[in-house]
Length: 80
Length: 364
Image 1 (tube, rainbow over the protein chains, first blue to last red):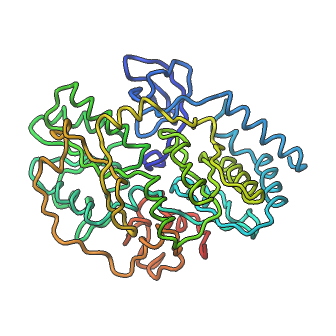
Image 2: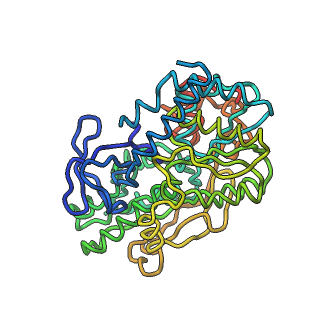
Image 3: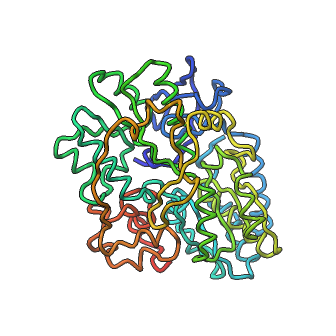
C-alpha cells in the first residue's frame, strides 16, 4: 500500500465536484477527496492527492516544458 | 498528459545519465532529505547508474522514523485509555516505542484505527459519539495542513470528541540543525518535493546563501531524481549555490497559500524532539490556544513512563546521514520489515526498509 506512505502524493483526475469534495479514480477505485487545500481545482484538472486531500493542481504546461527539455538533453546525448 | 509513465521513460533517463556522466568532474555528496526520494533512488537503482564522482546519502525526511520514542510512548499511552480510539496512518502501528507498539496495544484490547486520511478519523468521531477519537498528527509540512483542515472541519461540525496529538515536524529548521552540527559535509541537497508543494522553494534559500550548498527541489519519479542530480552537478561544476526547482509541475516558488493559511491559523511553531537529533527549536507545531479543545496533550493525562531506546539500533545515526544501514549489526538479522527493531525498518520511507526491500545500496 504505497498510498499510505507519508509524503507520497499521486496525480489523479477530478471527475466531479460537490462542495469541498471531489470524486476521483485511484487505481480503478472511485474515491472522494477533499478540496479544502485547493479551492481553485476544477473538473478535468489533475491534482496531487496526499492522505485524501488535493495539495495542488498539477501544471500541465510546466510538465510539457520539463519533458521537452529532457528530450533535448537525450537528443544532444545521442540517447533513445 | 500521463503524469507518471512520461516521467519514467527509459530513453530520457539514458540521456540524463549520459549528461551527468559527461558533466560531473568534481567529487560531490548529495543528500536526499526525503524518504520518498530514498525509495525512488533504491527502487530504480539510481545510485548504480551515477558516476563514481557522486555519492548519494539519505537524510532524516521520514516522519515516522524521526518520531522520538518519548512521543511514540505518548501515543501508546493514549491508546490504553478506556473509551479512546487512536486513529493513525498504517505505517505507525508496528513502530516499537519504549515498551510496546500500537499494534501490541491493539492486540491487548486498545482501539486503534488505521486510516487513510483525517477525513476517516473525523468520520470515526461522528460514528462514535460516546468515545474520544485521537488522530496522531505525524508528518511534515505536506501533512500538517490536512490535519489543520480536519480540526477546522471538526469545529464546523460541532464535534466535541475529536482530538489531535500534534507531533508534526518542520523541515527547514532541522536541515539547519544538521548543517550546524557539521557531521555530514554536503555539496548539494535534493529538497523534498511535496513539502515544497506546500511551503514553496523560498524557505530553502538560506541553505544556498548561508551554507553555499546547491539546492534543487525534486519530484518522485526516476526522471525527476536524475534531472535534479543533473542540475546539482551543473551548479557544483559552475561553483554556484542557488535554489532551483526541477519539479515544476508540482511546485511553484510561493507554495500553496491556502494550505499555508490553514496551517498558520491552527498551529504555531514549537520545539520538537527528533530521533537521533534531539530537540530542535521551532521545528514542530502545536495547536494555538484557540484550538486547545482539540489538543490531545491538553485534554488527556498522559503518563508514558521513562523512555528506553532499543539496544544496538543506529536509526538515529542513519537519519543524520552519518552511518548507513550496512553499518548496523541488526540490519537484516534481528531487524527486518516483519520484525523491526527501529523505525527506519518499519516505515516504507525508511532507509533500512528501502535498502532491505530493494536489496541494494549497502555500503552507502
